[in-house]
Length: 332
Image 1 (spheres, rainbow, N blue to C red):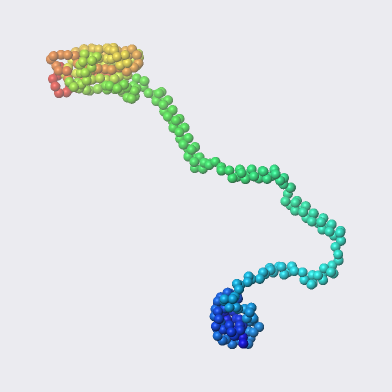
Image 2: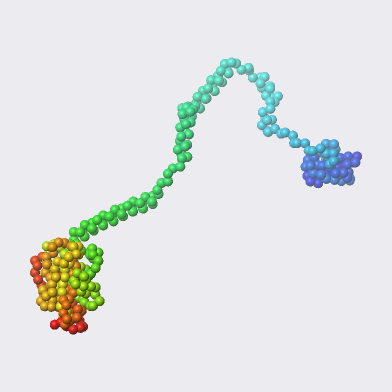
C-alpha cells in the first residue's frame, strides 16, 4: 500500500511504500532530511504529480549524493536548431551556382572597401604605433610646475616697487648733493670728540657753556681743562672765532685734526680778556677748537663763557654777542 509524505522544508509531495513510514529520508529536491509520517492518505488529484518511491526519496543511510542539475541550453539554441520546416524550405530552394558565390564575394569586398574609406587611409603599422607611443610618453611625462597669475602679479609688482624705490632714492641723492651746503656737513660726518659746530642760515654759530675743573685735560694746550668743538672749514673761506667770559681770561687754540698740529692760538685778540682768532682756512677739512683759560692767580679757571663762530667770504669782522653771566666771581 502506498502512502504520501510532504517535505517539511520545501513542501514537496512524494509517494512512498508503506514500510517507509517512520523512517528518516532525504528530500530529492532540497536535500532536507525529515521523518516520514506513519500514515497519510493519498490525495485523489495528485497521483499524476507524485513520483515513484525509488526515484523521489530514499533512506538517509542509503541515499546517494544529489545529482547535478541537468545542463540547460539558452533559448536561442532551440531557436537555431533546424526544424522540419527548414529542411522542407532547403529542398524547395534552387541550388546555388558558382556565379552566385562570386557575386557574394565581390559584394563582401565592396563592403570592406567602403568601411575602409569611412575609417580613413590605412595606418602604417610600426611608424604610427611609435608616434602614438611617443605622444603618450609626452602626455604622461610630468610637466614642470608653473606660476599662477597671482604669483606673476606679485613678482611684477615687487620688481616695479624696487625699481621705483631705487629711482626715487637716486633722485633724492642727486638733489641732496646738489642742494646741500658743503660748508655744513651732516652730523654723522663729523669725527668723534667735542661739540659739532653747525652753521645757521646767517652762517654763524653760538654756544653758551661753562668751564669747570672736572672738564677733560688736553695735552696739546699744556694740560689745561677745556671745552672742545669740531668745525668744518672750506679752503679759501674766512672764519671769525670769538671766546668771551666775565669770569676768567679767555684763551683759544685751533688744531688741524688730520695733521694733529696747532694752526692758531690767541689770548686777547678780541680785547682783554676776550680771545679772537681770524683765519682763512688753509684747506678743506675738520678742525678742533679748544676753549680754555689763560692762567691768572686772581681768578679760578672756571665759569661761564660764550663761543661765537662766523663764516664769511670777505673776512669782515662783526661784533660778537655778550657773554652769559653766571654765579661766581666776575673778572670785570
